[in-house]
Each structure stands twice: as C-alpha cells, then as structure tokens.
Image (tube, rainbow, N blue to C red; front, side, top):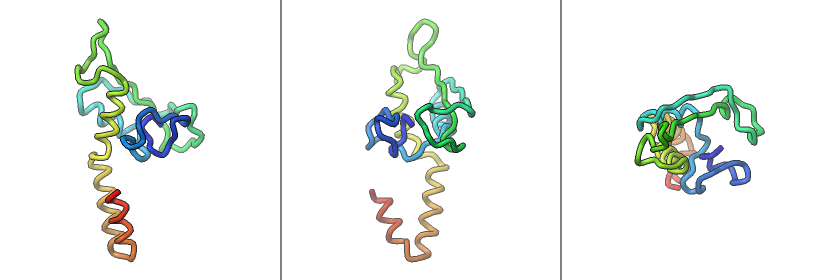
Length: 124
C-alpha cells in the first residue's frame, strides 16, 4: 500500500503518486531490496490493516534492517525509510517480471485491434 499508485494517501500510500508503482507485490519489494544489499525478511501471511481486499496478491510484509546496532545506517545511500521506498518504487518497474509481462501483453494486443490502444497506454 505504501508504494501503490492506485491508493490514496488516506488508504496508506506514503510516496508521491507520480513516483508510485501500480500494484507492487511483497516479493518484488523483497527482490529489489535484497539486490541492493539489505538484510530482508518477508512475512507472507501478514497484511496491511487498512487493506480491505484479502487476496493473496495483497498479502506480505517486508522487513528491512535500516540501521545497525550502534544506530548508523546499514547502507549510507539509504538513511531513511522514505529513501528506501522511493528507491523500490523506482526500481520495481525495471524488474524482468514486469518488463516481460508488459512485452507479452503488447504482442497479444498488437495481433488484434487493440494494438494502438496498448501503445498509447505505454507512452503515458
């Protein structure tokens, strides 16, 4: 919910809508954070309390170690939670799973009449 551009601030989004991602999953957030070098723990059965939809897609909590025992940041380029959220939202659309899904849907749309619609949506 923190990174979802479909949510309002009242529903739990914590970053600007222009930087947010469409329906990010907990596994995608975990992959992005683990790749940069964080200690990451994924809790599959946890849910965001304000989320009314109980689907598996919306489940999962990602816990990240931001600071060491002495209080210094684990990674100096990410001193705050918000910096991690912005980085994750910026990187998730570049994941292979996201780019392959988009590529597959574009090809199927181009075969039918919807090809122009697909291209228009991608430009936005």
